[in-house]
Image 1 (cartoon, rainbow, N blue to C red):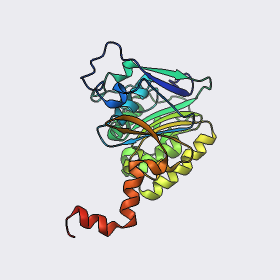
Image 2 (image 1 turned 90 degrees about the horizontal axis):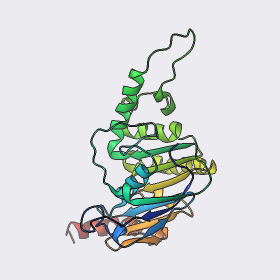
Image 3 (image 1 turned 90 degrees about the vertical axis):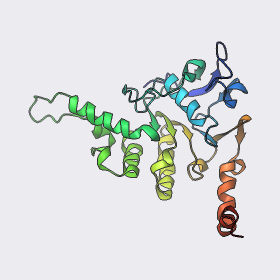
Length: 256
């Protein structure tokens, strides 16, 4: 497990950086010196381009995870597209030692599934009679992630691979999950949290964002602000839409 303890704070090292160059020009970096991390659940929300996934990725890499996702043991590199931000953040950690961890990137999940198959194929077979060779995919439910729907493979990850007492960094995990599965994920999250797990999640899902007593950071062009669930633009946008969907659609399509 890469983390030395539960994450408590992230400090931004602004020395030797070009503030006019991405990612150091992003408002969350230029306008803040540090952010605190909740011992259980921290959310990053906000519009695309405000730096949620960039910061999440930097936290993951600084914690020892592969930039394209996976557990601490993954070291594949399909395309080196991650930023240098991880070199300019300092992590502060507590004393509790996590024994599990995972970085989920929705956009590179296919690559991670392919890496699991490659590693399992490269493993030499056992010569011991009646001894079953343990494969990596066994920790993910035993069925190839490529042989499942996108949503089912995501769910296999949450259900089988996450074992508790873990540090889990998730980038838009709702991308492949139906609303009912997102609700089920809240239940699974709670089970893992009861086993002393810590989550940091970037999301556009008002369902996943609803976990109680979480710390919510809303990213914007002004930087980062702490919000309650109901204060987030994400919640307000969905609330306004479902309160009167016909009115909203008519206004958007100029049919009124």
